[in-house]
Image: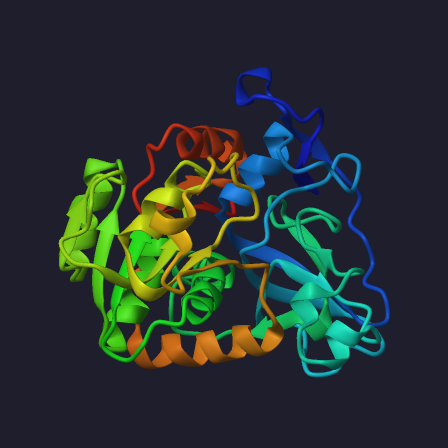
Length: 333
């Protein structure tokens, strides 16, 4: 089968991705062999390709927003049958025995493994997935609209919960790409006022079309103090900017897996008056189920730029250059 691999991590100009042929693997006892229909393109894939995330599997295939069909099941992979529609997300496995797993915080498991980082991901014709970390998906929506929900939507859902937005609160979103445009719609459906702050003019237009109360440059001040904010842009310089926009008692959640250095904070201006700074780490399967249930109720608009699977390198280049409004998705060819 054809698959993309990160051959030599480095700048995209050095062509770190390479398309190769790889034998089709047989599923283990609790695995599914999945034929990929669509795979979302995440900024984490870009960090892996460029070396911001150290590779954990040699020549790993990126991609962790996968929609496909079950081809074969392992002997102990109950709950799925060939032909079933399935989603494969970022969290691929946990130890199940550590205090984090036992306490309902499996996203913090020190032995957690991830699709497209530890296990080969969805930039391929097929992949193997752990049945316990696979999601049953509805038949109706197009695959390219479901794929971004499995990471962009999921991490936005967890970030929104980590941001402690009060009912009817004022939410600021810094950066407005794949995850933020889905998170904004969920927050709006829950009654929030949403202010978007991003350097991209097309993204600002999209934010207003989706119902944001305002859309300004990332370094501008929102029109009112914020109860909560989420930083999606991997730009550490924006941490003090977002903290400074919070009202007393407000919370900033940082949603990315990678962030450039944070400048020195001024305690009185950025943290005093009980402002809170939090990180967001992956998600739990309970998050996944809760978010997919919420999506079924709210039916967000997913703004997709489609690419054939054989142009994954071009999709990543467009993501790196901020040429994507919404989310890029690779489609089986």
